[in-house]
Length: 613
Image 1: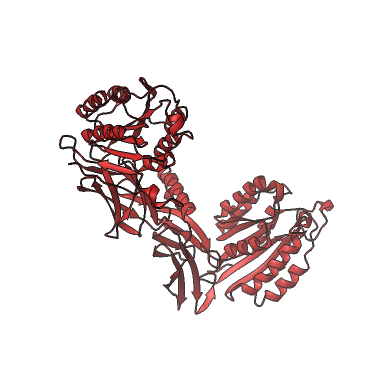
Image 2 (image 1 turned 90 degrees about the vertical axis):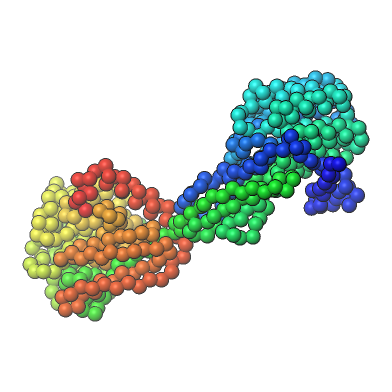
């Protein structure tokens, strides 16, 4: 005797009466000759996948089958188009159910689907294809006319599978009808399916006992299942619950966790599981309709791709410092007429003066400060290209004089950048101090001088030139290229600032001693002591090189979500370092990873340049 298994698949449907639930019946038994080896394969994600997007959940998809291989699934939807459907299914739930089955197949599964229609004859309405939109279009165009010839539909499907089916595929026919047919011919066609290794799943709409018996025998003889519904509105759920490939369920478990049930449609399964950082062993367990089980196992490595933050600070003889050595910094301010231009609702000079006056408050005591300006003495109409004045020379207690001099600046004249740099060379005293010049300007040379050559000469004297392009406006691209060339000539930095906040940060980056971060031999980031903006980097091993005299280097290890403050401390001429670590909230590192990969690729293409870092 064959087993009768009644599945109440629609128990969760809201509003269904208990008497309606019994109208969905599934009968399934695998005959000895139709039974095949239970197989299951996880197809996505691929084994040993490393995720880098910080995801903690992943969709697992695959195929499970007892009726053939799991590499391919070849399916033919054999659809009754007889005239009786006008009465039994006036709203065409038949098509809606078949379309729902197609739409719910795993999108990553290698499934080919065809459509065969039958009434008096069987006809291929859609040859087998991987294009599911074509299949859906064909199902939407099903007609309703003629009689019911099951054998014709089965044989048309077998011919299509024979012509276009793939080796090692699971081959299945999904046979839908609302009536009975010639029993002898139908069973003969099902035997042909059995001999060709094709499973026939049958679905009956209606209560015709003879029709139910024929469809049950067809399914049983080929190792398929039979479903009967009396209410056409139940067809969409019935199509989805056909155990197409002889598999009853697939469960997923991660690292021995409680198994979760997957969505199983047409032999394909999919389910979402949470993953931990590190190695995750995902086990998919298939159970066949006759209670056999089989597993497919993959390992997924999850990399925490959140960034770490690195900040470098310095202490000199117990005091916060912008350098491990005594440091001399001269600020050169553009006071040309163009500084009357407005930004943030007020003249650029007003914004610059407010920020520059604050500089002396947060500069460490070990920093000697001087102030020079150009364009501040003569109106622009005078075309005075020698208009550059040392307002406050290096010396003791310069903070108050610097603030007073800045307050008195008025934008007047030309932009003689080269002349100002040449004059600044004499402002510095010789000695072992770190020496740098910070030029704040809103434009480029206007007097025909050569700022690049002047910056190169300063570098030869051990003076690094940094430039801050402040509120450049529409000429930003052209002016930035010129100013960048000046900074490059002295080994300094060029930074643009379009607001008061950006100007303050730019001054912090240029006044402090620069440091560079290397991954291997490739420079991947840079900043300066005193910067309030930490560097965001992916986890890894790095080398921090401070441009001090002599240079100092420290190797650091960053873990994702580290907030590391590296402090270099100088005491009695000896330099040591210590680390302070805190937790950083999740911060995406996608941009930093892409930047490092680009720099490493450029270095690989230009090894000569790499050696100069």
